[in-house]
Image (cartoon, rainbow, N blue to C red; front, side, top):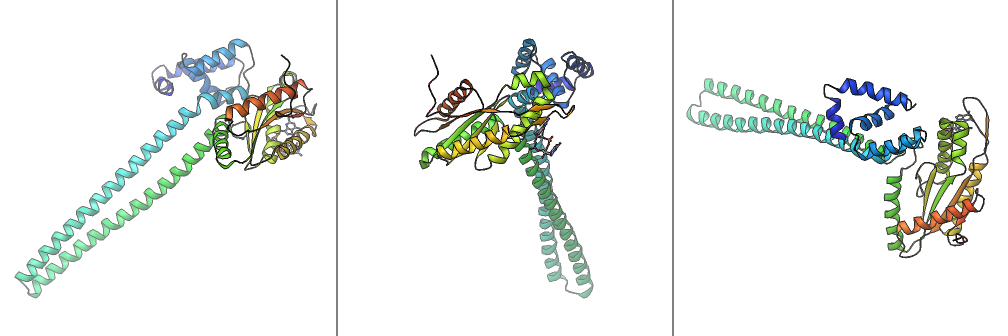
Length: 352
Ligand code: C2E
């Protein structure tokens, strides 16, 4: 998909496409942010791609296209292509550096070979004509050759130092790109892809070590109603608020993530059911304890509450099975009146 878009934006119709992108964003009543621009660019230039199909579905549903919708689409459909572009660019830089180092090494090798020849020649000439005049010529040619080799050696050293700096820069940049690809841009928590990877790894580890691990799913109560009443920008702030409490309480080795629109997830490695439940209740109380204000108008938004379901992994259980039980517990919390934490092991079964 990315290559089709890349080709189009370097083709003669690129400017007319850019105009159509702006018109389409205006028609859809979204801000022309860089991310929206990128999404619409894909939407218009690669209509058959999975991203475009998902966008078509969302737009046809009439649901508002919010900043968080854009973030979720980007997390699901864009980072891989962004990451691979960065990796390809990094590959090009590395190739350039390696070629420059190889050429500096060639020059140094050549000047060493020349130096060897000069030495051998000087030795022959000294054996053949050891008078002081020819000795002077020989010494002068040796010192010229020594200067040349020194010049090439220090050029090689400088080249190696500069390549080393480039490679360190590249490594840091790629590390930043890797972190971005694993992070939800709106809340700065881990994104779903990062979370799923961690969950699989931690469940494997818990199975091997026989250690406990808990998994919680958290949903903001009545988030849609909140969004409809106060607007999506305020909705996004609520997501950031909940995320900020999670980031504070669910610190490493716990892993907190934005799992979907208004859904969050936390892994509690090595913790017993009692400890997990206490932490989740602390999060729930902390979130509900603050009266939020709408930044633009100072309106009182009231408190935000969350519903939580959690499950302790049973021996032999897969990550997906734990997730399913946590999800059922979350729905038990919703059914039970929201603003509560439900343990999957003690939840009442759902009515048939
Ligand atoms: P943010 O707006 O980027 O704010 C980041 C942090 O700056 C906040 O972290 C808080 O420590 C501080 N801060 C910003 N504005 C104010 C303010 O008017 N008064 C005070 N006392 N501190 C302020 P915090 O509290 O963890 O909130 C994280 C994010 O949650 C905020 O990011 C914002 O997006 C959202 N949020 C929190 N409280 C409210 C609220 O009352 N209304 C709205 N609309 N959003 C809120």
